[in-house]
Length: 151
Image (cartoon, rainbow, N blue to C red; front, side):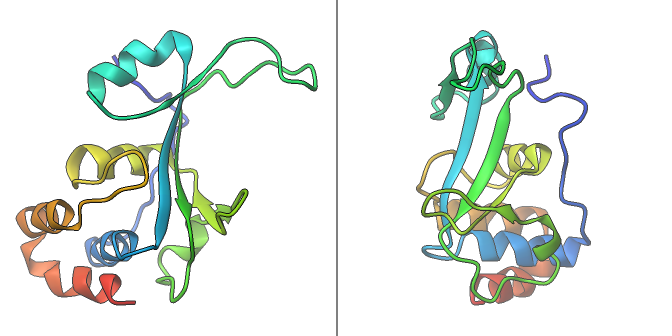
């Protein structure tokens, strides 16, 4: 029972750059929100894959402009700032919205870091949990993780 469709995208970088990006994402005040927008009829899938994680339900119907509401699950990362952004991450940043300066719209990437690396939907990230997962999965790249964290 897949939450994301076949068109959902990932961020494809080297293991070294991936660890830099993870460190960068969990540094204080970097990410403002990791968001899940889920169509109401798919909420059971989200709740099964991400128990107790917050999400915004998308009610079915039409937008004020007469278009059909989003049909797919939307997983995004919104940035408060992108100061000193690693070069490997820059191509994956999209236009921000509201007070957020940029965002990542790569659903598979967001799914991966929430499922496997200690990140959470919402506006709080547990740096200790993230660090522990990176240490467990990529012990040879902890220096790169801290390099990203300190950017």
